[in-house]
Amino acid sequence: MQSGRTWIWIVGLALWVALPFFATRHIVDLLVYAGLYTIAGLGVAFLLGQCGIVNLAQSVFYGIGAYCTAWFCLRHGLPSPVGFAAGIAISAGIAAVVGWPILRLSGYFLALATLALGIIGQVLFLEWDGITGGTLGIGGIPHIAPFGFAFNTPLRFYFLVWPITLLLLILHHNLLHSRNGLALRAMRDSPEAAAVLGVDIHKLKVQIFVLSAALGSVAGSLLAHYVTFVSVDSFAVDRSISFLLLAVLGGLYTVWGPVLGALFVTILPQWLSKLGDIHAFVFAAALIAAVILLPEGFGGAIRHWRRARVTK
Amino acid sequence: MTAMDSTEPLLQVSATSHSFGGLRVLQKVNFGVPAGSLTGLIGPNGAGKSTLFNIVSGFLLPQLGTVRFGGRDITRDTVQARTHAGLMRTFQTPKVFGKLTVRENLMMGCYRHLASGVMGNMLRSPRSRAEMQQMHAQATEAGERFGLNGVMERLAGQVPVGTQRLVELARSCLSRPRLLMLDEPSSGLNTTEIGQLRELLLRLNGEGMTILLVSHDMHLVDVASEVHVLCFGSIIASGSMTQVKQDERVREAYLGV
Image 1: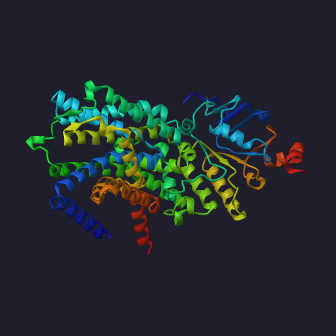
Image 2 (image 1 turned 120 degrees about the horizontal axis):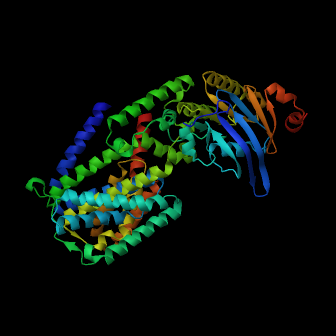
Image 3 (image 1 turned 60 degrees about the horizontal axis):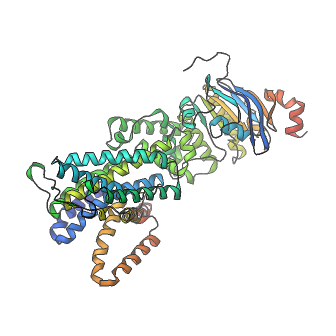
C-alpha cells in the first residue's frame, strides 16, 4: 500500500514534468492559468467547504494582489516579494476589517454581502485609475527573475506556479488535519457543541476568510508577473463566479479538488471552442452534467471511489 | 481567579426569572451546586428545567437574576468564556460531530486546553504536532475509560444513540470541566444503559467531578446527593432524594400521588 502510494507520486511527478514539453504553447499557457485559478479557488473552496461561507469577493483580492505587484514592482522598481507581501497584507487587512462584521451573517445574506464587496471592488478598480490604470490597464510589469533567471515564457512559469500551488495545497492539507481543521469540521456538524467545547466560531471564520483573501492576492500577484499586463476586466465579479464554480466543481471537502475544478474551467472551454459557435452550450451542458452526476465534485467522486475500493 | 467565599457554592443561581411572551417560565429561582457534589435538578415536563439549564450554560440571557460560577458573576458571559472558566454542558439530544470519527470527537474534548494557531498548524510547527499527538493519546485513554474502544474509528453519526451519549460524556470529561452539566442524559437509553450511566456518574463524582444532573427520570436522579425540585418555574423542595420524595407538594405536583 505504502509503496503503491510512492509510485503514484513518482509517476504523477514524471507526468507533470513531461507534460509541458509535449503540449503546445497554448495548452501550457492554459495550464499556467489553471495553476493560478487553483490558488485563488482553493481559498474559495476551503472557506465554503469548511465554514459554509460563499465568497463572491475573491476577484477583489485577486485584483489587489495584481495591482500591488504593478504598483510596487513597476512604479517603484521594488523586488517582486514586496508586491506579494503588500498584496497579502492589504487583502488580509480588508478581509479582517470587512469580515469581522459580515461574518456574523449567514447563508444568502452573507453571500450577498460578499457580492457587494466584489462589486464595490470592481467599481473602485475602475475609478482609481491613478493606481490601477482604469480600463487602459497597466503594462510592462516585470517578470519574476530571481538571480537573473526570468520566468518569462509559459513553460518557465509553469515550473514556477505549480510548485507554489502544491506548497499551498500542502499547507491547507496540514491545516485541515490539525486542531483548527478538526474544529472547522466539528463546527460544520454542530456549531453549538463546538462552541461549548471552547471553539471561538466567529474568530475562526474570520481567520479562514483572511487566509482565503491572502490566497486570492497571491494568485493575482502571480498573474501580474505572468502576463505583465493588468486591467480591470480581469477582476470583475464574473471572475469571482469562476472561482466559486471551480471550487464547487472540484469538490469542497478535499483539499485537492480545486486542481481538478481549475483544469475543468480553464482547459475545457478552450477545447470546446474548436466546435465553433455551439461551444458555449456544450460547456454549459458539461457543467450541468458535472454538477448533477457528481454532487460532491470531482474530489468527492474520487474519494468515494477510493473508499469503495478499500472496503471491497 | 477571584477570591471565593469558602461557603459559596461552585455554581450559584440567584433570583432568576424569565418569561417567554406572557408565559412566566422561571420565577425567582435560587439554587446552588456545591463543589464536589452530584446535584440533581428534577421536575416534570414544562417545569422550566431546560430554560434554567440554558441560562446557566449561556445559551439564554435571563431577564432577571444572576448566575455566579467559581465566585464570579458569569450571567452575561459568552458560551466560550464559560467553557474556559470550566463550565461544560451536554445536550438533550446528544450533539456529536456526526461526520467526525468517535476518536476525533474525543479529540475535540481537549480543544480548550490547547493553543496552536492557524499559521503554526499550516506549517506543522513542533507545537502543532505535539498537540495532535497529545489529543490522540488522550482520546485513546478516554476511549478505554468509557468503553468506546470498539467504535473509535467509526463515524460518530453512525453509532447508536446510547453510544453517542457516551461519546458526548467522554468528550465533555476530556475538557476537564470544574462543573459538568448533563441535560436529560438518560433520554433514549434503555434500562441497562441507564444502570451503566448511574455507575459512571457515581464513578466520575467519586473522582472529584462536580456534576449537575437535570432530568425528569427519578430513577437516575437517585444517584444525586442533593436534589432540587423545579415545578412551574419555582424550586418547591430541596434536600436528599428520600426527603424530597416525602414532601407533600412534590408528591402532589410531580409524582401525582
